[in-house]
Image (cartoon, rainbow, N blue to C red):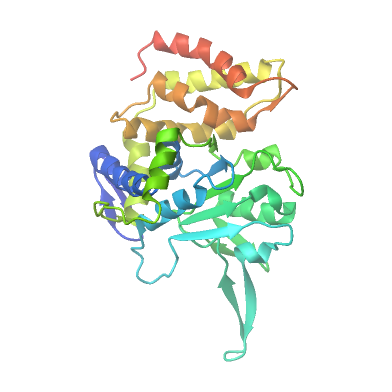
Amino acid sequence: MVTATNPETKHTVSSLQEAFEVAQHVRGHMKDNVMGRDDVIELVLVALFADGHCLLEDYPGSGKTTLAKALGNAIHDDLPDDDIPSFRRIQFTPDLLPSDVTGVTIFDTHTNTFQFRRGPVFAYVVLVDEINRTSPKVQSALLEAMAEKQVTVDNVSYKLDDLFFVLATQNPLDAIGTYPLPLAQLDRFLFKLVMRHIDRASELEVLRNWGMPRKIEPRPFVSRGAIVAARHLVRAQVSVNVAIHECLVDIAQRLRADKRVRQGVSTRCLVQAIPALQTLAMLRGRDFVSTEDVEYLAVPLFAHRLELAPGARADQVISEAVSVPIEALSRRTVR
């Protein structure tokens, strides 16, 4: 039996069932606060436990802040000597500076020394609203935090928490005054999730319950240490057959060879896909990755990493690229 332990808190998760229960507690907090978004909640959970980040493409007023805040509020800080908040929101604007995100060094007149004052990026869950509305210089500061889990201010690097998780948003329609994210930065996001308006029944329920006290069953909070430990255990206990590796590489090769694709997926994308597939398998009660996991995650994993020729649709291109390797894989034993 493999046991995963978070060395900072000594929190231990000893089985996939325990990791599943940790994820279910987080899912419960999010579903209590966000209606009609079960599919998005599942993929956000996959990204969280796979140690990735999410880009949400949505319309204003679609519940992204509520979703991110519910995720942050579900996490309990188990580091008594630290004061990292569970959730912070950063509104990106054209006049934002990198120090507004990372923090700034100030002079302390009492000690006659310079002290670092941490910015809002020092949190467990960070909602970055309208990420494409600020300058590339600010975007690059966030990119370092996402890629390295650290920020550099005045040539000094400061480590972020192991749990650090970014939910970024962008409006799919409003392009005035925006700075489109380059593919290199999009590649840092594990998923890009396209959020549509919720269904009629869910929207009616929101209106009926607006301003009314809701009877929600109290749920236990989840410690940050439990989530970090669960990440390590899932990677150790959910098996990935070499056939899955071959399938991912074959999909990438087919995408790169497609005449409708100007730039294909990177090797980094394939590496990031492994823990995402393992996490999805765990959430669905399995200790091995299957073909269904690859099919389910293909579009959110690959679509935002492709540069396509005019008129080409990412979902169609990916579906065609996935079909042949999946069909070949389904004829083999992948456990």
